[in-house]
Amino acid sequence: MFPSVNEQMDLIRSGAIDILPEDELVKKIEVSIKKNKPMTIKLGADPSRPDLHLGHAVVLHKMRQFQDLGHKAILIIGDFTAMIGDPTGKSKTRPQLTLEETRINGQSYLEQANIILSNDRLEVRYNSEWLSKMTFNDVILLTSKYTVAQLLERDDFSKRFKVGVPISVHELLYPLAQAMDSAAIESDVELGGSDQKFNLLVGREIQKAYGKEPQCILTMPLLEGTDGVEKMSKSLDNYIALTDTPREMFGKVMSIPDNMICRYLQYAAMADTDFVKSVEKGLADGSAHPRNAKVDAAKRVVALYHGEQAGDDAFAEFERIFKNKELPDEIESMSIEHDSNEIGIMDLLVKSNLAPSKKEAKRLIDGGGVSVDGEKIEEGFAPVDISSERLLKVGKRKFLKVIKL
RNA sequence: GGGCAGGUACCGAAGCGGUCAACCGGGGCAGACUGUAAAUCUGCUGGGCUACGCCCUACGGAGGUUCGAAUCCUUCCCUGCCCA
Image (cartoon, rainbow, N blue to C red; front, side, top):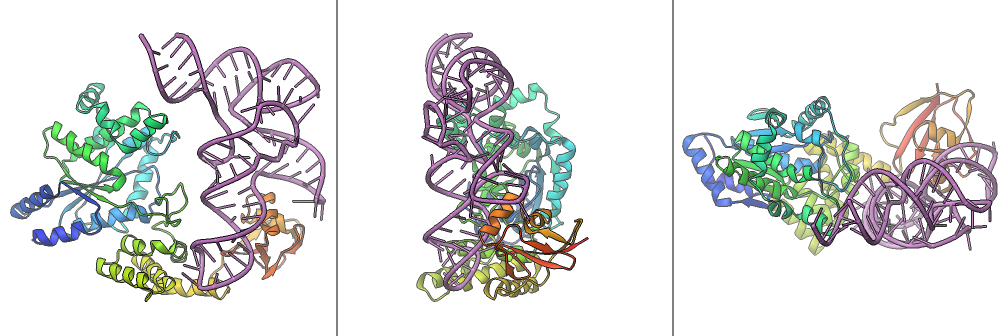
């Protein structure tokens, strides 16, 4: 039924940062094989940000591997915890979501996660199921199992504490709430990003405190965003969404710094380890050209989510636009409402949402970034005749066809 | 409850009566170049106005002093530290 322990461990180890404790995991797998019973793998999902990106995908792919090995995936949608507000991030208090909103977001999360996960052996649970039922007594009981000092061990808590950035009590409770999830579903393994290590380990302790078998934890690296420095996140706008179009995906991968190529090959394109190593070597000794390596990585990422053909097409399009400075295949069009046939270029840019304000439009024009039908606009008040279709270009990659409605 | 230090644009951080739409850094955007939406260099980075000038809104909130405030005073809110 199940692959051998070694086979399983090889796959499980690939790309992981920490597996704690590893020998315990080996034992769990042995038992699983002996009893022919799948392990329960937990992954918590935060439904406050409904757009999944390649950063989330790293751990989802790991989950998929467990599924492929025959184990059972449980996706916990943190609808309850999202209602309280996520503590990660600084002093900003997140807007509280209603239960309804979290459900909608949770649904959207699920749809996107399904791009990667298999539908077999997948269970979805909402943590309000058990967390919302807890009484204050239950909370006291839970919080008595852990100490302030233990909670302050968490890196970001201790840093914030030291520097004097406020920490609200409910934020301290967050790891405990998440740990409750593990106790509730009796997970064997919990997956997460490396920043989750602390929370995952709390899960172990709380499971023990509630008389359950403690879970093992597995952390995956946090993929850097397209800037190559900060971790990928929506708020930093350095992310590649799972639902990005092939063209966007390709372009965004091409925008990563060269030193991120191998990292992306491994964790964004999910290329196998040997291949990544060979590219690494090639780049180091100069036998591989960074641009070509990056193009290859970009193609692979697009292929992973849109198919191989899409990868090739995206490459062709990229060459056309950026190397040959030609026009993209398809350009969106927009009808503009206006009284007369002529409209000032600044107004046109604002109306077509290519600039947020006329000031900004002016800056773009002054900077030489605006052209109409291929001709650079030099003057802010230049009139544009929109009785027939015009091609607007702003910057290197914003194209829009406009015509009077 | 008491004492102290703070709250400035997307973030960090100067400014402490006029020359402040606010130094500087990061980020973002645009340009040049190129091997790419890499790297490097340059410019821009509140809003309105046919506009290299004028006007409006902005420095936690509300009042006040002043010809004039982000800068001084009062009060309120928020945060951190120390003491209880």
